[in-house]
Amino acid sequence: MSDATNQHPGINLAHARPQDSRHAEVTVFGFWTFLMSDAILFALLFATYATMVNRTAGGPSGSELFDITNAFVETVVLLVSSFTFGMGAVALKEGRQRAVMLWLGVTMVLGLGFVGLELREFTGLIGEGATAQTSGFLSSFFVLLSTHGLHVLVGCLWIAVMLVQIASFGLSRQVRSRILRLALFWHFLDLVWIVIFTVVYLPAVAS
Amino acid sequence: MSGPWEGELGGHRVVQPASEAQRERRSYIWGLGSALVLTGAAFGLAVFKLLAGPALLAAIGVLALVQIAVQFRFFLHIDLSRSKREDLQLILFTGLLVLIMVGGSLWIMSSLDQRMMGG
Image 1 (cartoon, rainbow over the protein chains, first blue to last red):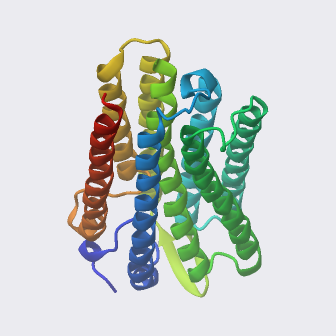
Image 2 (cartoon, each protein chain N blue to C red):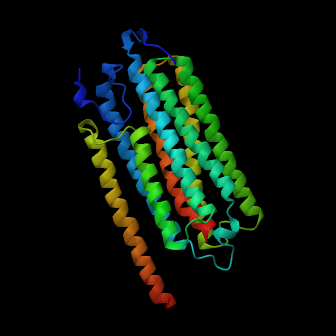
Image 3 (cartoon, rainbow over the protein chains, first blue to last red):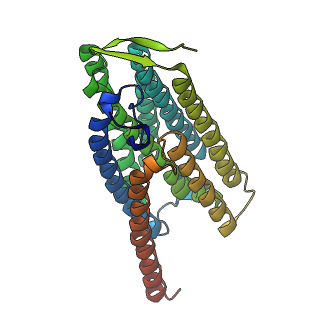
């Protein structure tokens, strides 16, 4: 039994299920390490974008291309999905299996909706002739945005896998631990999105 | 909402006090509310052109940093308490690496840009 002051950080279930804490301490810290290396990947994509943002090579600039309403809707969808996952984590703490599956399902639908909005934006841009080959600015834009979008898509796939696992194994110790790591991953994607709308969309719409 | 949950799960007897889950639920609701306000403020400043130029960039930058801190606190449950120290140190160290690499890259590239373009 670990004492209360020595519980592992992040979202932990130690209070509800003391037998979880030792397992969680190792795996959750390892997962945080992965998330932070992923954060460095995104940070360097942001640095690339920032150096490329004025290199439009005679092509269209961000202020001519970006649809701020679409970006705002994407922001709200992703933020609400982060919240619904949180509700799922609370239900997990209470051991309500049906509620966990419901909230995870809602989160997955919102995640797929986000990816759909992003794909619609991409096809719109490409239709206007603003492809990744047009300029350094658009190359770095598509790389940054699609790397994030791909992360969201992988998150949706992970949710689907967890829904199958909950249905077949119930809320077993391993399933609970995996859902908590998935929660960290999902909240992390919303953090990256905050930086995306701050660095990519807002300066473009204001200029 | 739901009362205390008590029962058998995976062979373990589990008692979950309602207050704990209630407190967490409230934490997520607070997180959502403050994140919506901060997002709305950032978009509002830019879209309605309430500020311009460097002042706008500084303002939305600060709003983004505050929102990141808010989400760490309410969604990821990272705070200054002793039990979260290890994770916080990992996050802050990553922040330092990002600052050095991103800040350094931007510095070098903008300096190069000025020399090459004569700007």
